[in-house]
Image (tube, rainbow, N blue to C red; front, side, top):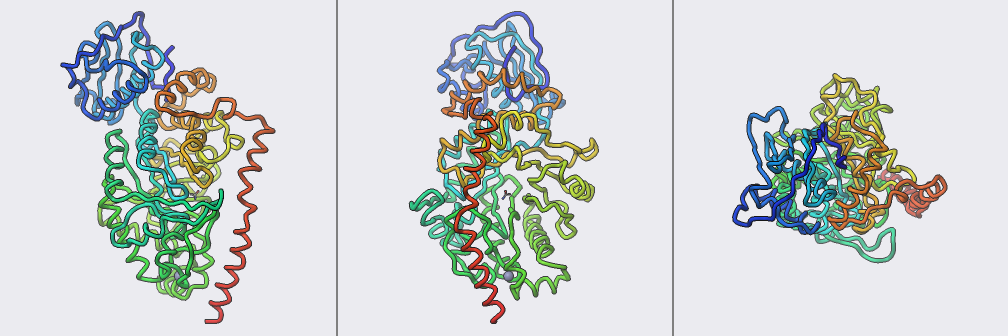
Amino acid sequence: MLKLIPVPNSVKYENGYFQLKKDNLNDNNILKNNIANDIEQFANGFGIFSFWKNKENLTVSVKDDFSILGDEGYRLKIDENGILIEAYKENGVFYAIQTLKQIVVQCGEKLPFVSIEDKPRFEFRGFMLDVGRYFYTVDEVKHFLDLMAIHKLNKFHFHLTEDQGWRVEIKKYPLLTEKGSKRSHTNFGCVPRSGYYTQEQIREIVEYAHSKYIKVIPEFDIPGHTVSAIACYPELSCFNRKLDVATHWGVKHDILCAGKESTYKFVYDVLDELAELFPDGEIHLGGDEAVKMRWDICPHCQAEIKKQGLKDSEELQQFFMTKVNAYLNKKGIKTIMWNWDDIKPTEHLDPSITWNLCASTEASLNCIRGEMAAGRDLIVNTTFPYYLDFPYGWVNLKFAYEFNPVKGITEDEMKHIRGVEAPLWTEYVSNMKKAHYMTFPRLGAICENAWSLPEQKDWQWFCDRMDMYYSLLNVYGVKPATIKQSMPSKFVGAFSSLWFNRRMLHWQGLHNLIDDAIVKAKAKHN
Ligand code: ACM
Ligand code: ZN
């Protein structure tokens, strides 16, 4: 049996083999450029000749007749005539090629007769990279895009702004990158870390993503996670706080002031430039971990609450996000936001904003049911198992594989579930080696939740396919965690939890206490 990840909807075998014929460089226009480049890149890594350049090997047919396959589905047939790919859209051809790579990885030049019909379960199949905590170079980001493609993922959530670093050049606010992209030291030692993408580099990344049929959703995280911006422009915060770019992990207490017109001007200016750089029609506005202790005592924020007839700072955040969402909507851009874990009904949050749902559907059913009824769409990225930074002792491979992202969701409600996403937070992931170790093989398990039919999932069969998967990752220069490392014993698991949680013991907690007391005292005094 062919080993394929994610498992296709339908695979039928027949007797016989097709022997790939050597490339014929005169016939090199069977595949469109992007797809030709993608499979050439694979062939170079695997060490096989350019078989798709020979018309005797491959036929591609993109036609309206195949609309039943949807925008991303495909048929892949191998028989005595060679390889036939049928699709409604080019995206489908691209995914057929991803499947073909896996067949070649396990079969070499002698391909079994087979007929595959396949299309994704979900429209949204995402991966998020946090480049705010640690910067990843353009080439490293492109490599992640290559890896997303082989998992048939199609949405790259680019987490670009963080307390610990601002990573995207904004021409109107040059300090954001001059100063905001640098931190003096990190959790891991007294070395400075920095880095940002110029607008030209951002365009290069977006173009590369498009060549892999991936859309890019930039995240400008507001109102929390904005210390790097406040460090450059203190007036963005309540009480004009003079701060350094954050050095350490942790939820910060200084966030954008939601009561000043100047804050909106800044946010809109940044969004104007992001909208130009990212043409895919969606922007992520964060919204997570916005601690309200400054808002609760800030005269500007309190005045805004009163003026808008809101109840409290929580409602002020809903108002703030809705107002910024309206600004984006006017440009024809839709908004996504973290829901984080405060699962409360959101009377003042525009229902057209999609939620990145961190809590599990089952645990938050009461709330999200109401939200969906009001029209809100969801992308499921439940912390367990989708947070790829969590140690394998918390989320082992089997748990990630067997997780049901839509537990408790009715068939009727499924139309509000856009799909799933796996975020790689990088507070503790400072290089590609660690990033690969945390992400793979878990992303292989997760991509079956995104693409395959739930009834096709089978843990034992998944394990049996791992040798093909590891060979494929090897072609792309990835060293994943071993199966053993991804399924640690209870003892190792407990130890890794302790090690992961050592971050809680940092002096930052004490620093916050003192800092909060000072802000409070000053506010009272004024
Ligand atoms: C989050 O985990 N900060 C969304
Ligand atoms: Zn304020």
